[in-house]
Length: 635
Image 1 (cartoon, rainbow, N blue to C red):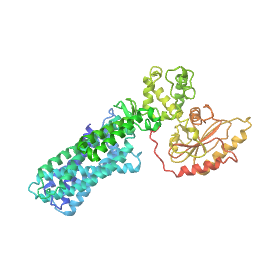
Image 2: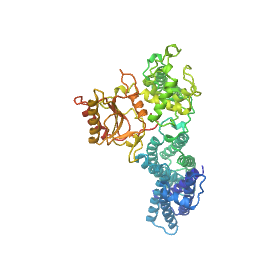
Image 3: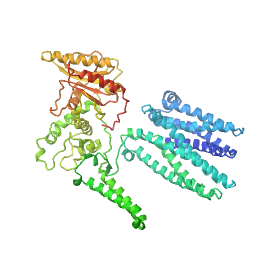
Image 4: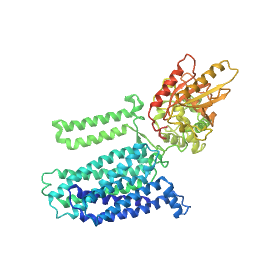
């Protein structure tokens, strides 16, 4: 809270100084009466900046380590946040010097230079927060300074306008109307930038729409949006007032200042929340996820299932929504019904909205949006496979297709874990059912027989298993990006690459083979593996090999640290419609694109089967595609 308060005060002081500089410039007014306030705000912002770096260091450096001068100096000079703070403080010092100089010198160019410096100070407010995260895309990092510049300019200008109105009662009504009208144009532009940049930032920092309520970051952001809506409604009333015919000649300063004060109050509260948000973990990286509602909205889990319409409540609620919407429209447009439209239209519209939301609602739990603490890696999939073998086969069967020996005796058939409907549930939903029992009451809870980590391992296994039904479409012809390749550790003689994820940015071929010299097809398989190695090298792709037996080694290939776990994981993906799942892959090659998706699969590279040509074409194609960030929530 201390860090959030310091960020709030620092930002507010900068905004006030810039607002008082900006307002007189809109009407070419002499703003000398604001000079002392501007100088005081600029100097205080500089001083509070020193407190901010101390609070930031204390928030990051372990509590058991004393925050003495050498430690603080090392933090300032040796971290990205520290160096960014130095740059912002230098800029703030120059701005404070210019503000103090204006107390002695009255010069138009000095005023303009001070305003420009102030705007730069506003823009760099964000560089000591989440904007320093270099893992974010460049467009998101650039959105932060634009967001803070536009937002703080709006807040500072709004505060400056209210102050101008309260202290400008001797000004002619036309002057007050003109400054309000010109400020309105500036505010509209600033709000447009805030909304666009805010959407870009939220796209990367929130992750899922559900995280707006399921995480501390998201809940603060939701409250921030509510305050923004309140401020925009007040701003709309001010803008409408300026369009009234009598407003220019009989401008009501007291009313305008009062409404503007309410808007400024929303803006200042919003700024405090923004400072708080900048000090906590973004929702997309949050592990403390708690969903507060007993339902959630999902198209994939309702309409996307393509159920028989007249047998499903989803369809009934949707029809009701359309019926209420039609009634509301009739009440509004049909002349004979217009006498009831003031009541019937809003009631019908509200009923249509409620029924529409119910039609896309499914049951939810506190864990619904919890992200797995166990990484989506082959070793976890193998552990999950072992947990599945020990607990789930009697009902769900060896392949997960609801064909276990006990399946027919159950009152409610077990779920087919390879069916498409599995993807409509969140991983948190599945974790809840594994912990507390299934929705139907037939599946028992497994909290007493498995640990929490074992249940998350099982979910990683089920994630791969549920894709096995679709993986039959994998072949030499590339598919769209839908299957995230499970990560696994690899051995690198240079110790530069630790896992497959580090190979992203370049297409990667993962080859599996089991070779025996006495096998009649040994020579043919050797030729296939050699062709795969030569082709990947010629095309500039990475090559990872998981070979057992006497297969020819590729000297340029990466080797996996846990070949058994990797082979088991990819044997599930290797499942064909007419073949059972086996734990061994005689031969198989999987092409992973630059973003980490499995895009193509090859059984063998023969002399005349055309697979080598397909491999070259797919590597060339995926090498040109842009890198798409694979969200950890996407699996």
